[in-house]
Length: 399
Ligand SMILES: *Cc1c(COP(=O)(O)O)cnc(C)c1O
Image (cartoon, rainbow, N blue to C red):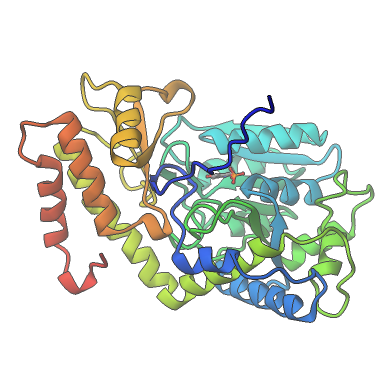
């Protein structure tokens, strides 16, 4: 007998409030279903141009070299490092969570000389501390740091780092996978030389592309390489020939449908406006945190450095992590994230990213947690969140 073919695709609508992916806007789903065109079709090339110009606006940069790498956020990280580093280059990576650690892994594989500084998870780096390391090691040519550490919920201030890097001939590489379009990010204003993101966090597009931008200084560093880029797929000198106007040389087949999706996701972002979008993330996070506090969940990341799109909180006393997260998923169709590494079973990571960052999502999650954690408390979590929204001007609240 031939085995049964499992033909129904068992994907269902969930409220995605984890560390990514986030819920997708209907316009983006619609874009994914549009007819394919060839990757050198003039109409598709126009779509690519539009993607590039919208990416420049979202990254707040005039960088010519701004495009989307094929692959998820990690491909953006690898593309930035593999193109800007050569063996034996000295590199400083700042690590206060999983993603800083991942940068170190890539740097070591490239045979570069790694200087690593660490902060406890949930904390952030002081620019002074980074300046001291750069002073002690004048040979450092590149500094890598994460803007929004999704593993901890900490928000790294960046405004002063560009100037520190420019005092020497050093490039500043910033991971903006989770931050892009959720909190302020100024690629040109802050002197960032390479910045990458991912489609699946605050851009609310499925995972699959990694927006990236390189400054002129970064482009010069790449042009001056003595060795070939060790990755063929991610070699920017070839990718730029495909993305740049005029040349359009075949390198690999662009993920056509994902570019359609990113095009519409960026249009949604720009129609809302970056400032309005940042404000929406801040408001909904404040209400969520108030609701969680009423349920006994203390914030994890350091006060004053908390991300609105990734709310990390300690579990309330006596609550079983795996049980609650499984019931949220099975009974309420809601996904939230657990802690990684040492934080497993101790914290939750609750994402309010892009489309998922709505008053309705906040209240739906708190209703579920009220039932699961405090069934006799009369909706304590929801009431606290509603009170917090009440302190915000009503016209400022988007449902
Ligand atoms: C999610 C994430 C990544 C990796 O992105 P993938 O899409 O999972 O490859 C890198 N850095 C940060 C800060 C992230 O949150």
